[in-house]
Amino acid sequence: MTKRKSEERSPVKAAPGPRTSQAIEQAQAKRDALPLRPFMEVEESESGTRQMAATHSDAAGHSAWLMSSLGTSSTSFLIQQLNSLEVATAGTAPGTDPNVFGINAALAMLGAIDPQDELEGALATQMVGCHSLSMAMLCRAKSTTRTDQLQLYGNLAVKLQRTFTAQIEALARMRGKGQQTVRVEHVTVHPGGQAIVGDVNYHPGGPGAHGKSEVLPHEMPAAGLAAPSSALPSPNPLGDAVPLPVHAKRKVPAARRAKSRTAARE
Image (tube, rainbow, N blue to C red; front, side, top):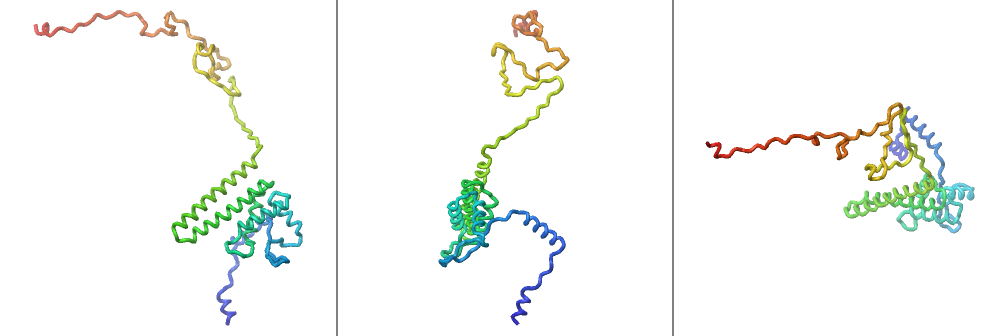
């Protein structure tokens, strides 16, 4: 009777369709191409305590794998960072077993960051802890019905997310130190023209301001054309190149006087 009820509750599912099977095959191929991250399990020690340990018998190889994921060759640095990750990913209930899923997720994230030295390894550990705490605050904000707690946990989550973004930018700056930037600029010079490479400073004003006149590059004469000559001298003592009409001599017209009102009445 019990067997029949269990069979009714868990019906046999149909096999995936052609498109689903194709997507699964592509996902499996992509997963197999990704690098394998370090992972651990919880085991009971000789003293009776439960702790994280390797899943195979090659303890030295597992330790080297963990060191590589933190960018260090120091066993002390490895133990310190693993203890920090264990506390950052642990549950809130005291006396519980280590969070094996949280530790393995943190190790996977460390593998994605791929620190190259202890400084990057410390920053990577902080990034993992910041992400773990940020998600915890989001979960608390989601599960509460009080407005004050929602605001508290939501604000903490936003601050942690901004810190996480700043940590990513700091890591990018650390890895970009000593990097040279090469800028290539294209200059198009038409036939007969000239190009100037460098800083060109133009000071407005005539020869009296700087002692000499400056010619801009676009004012240079083209090939085969005569250079522009200066304007012809003018007899005008004011120094105008071309006499203006206002300077011509004209006769002053006779003054026109208005008739008086008495004469107009007569």
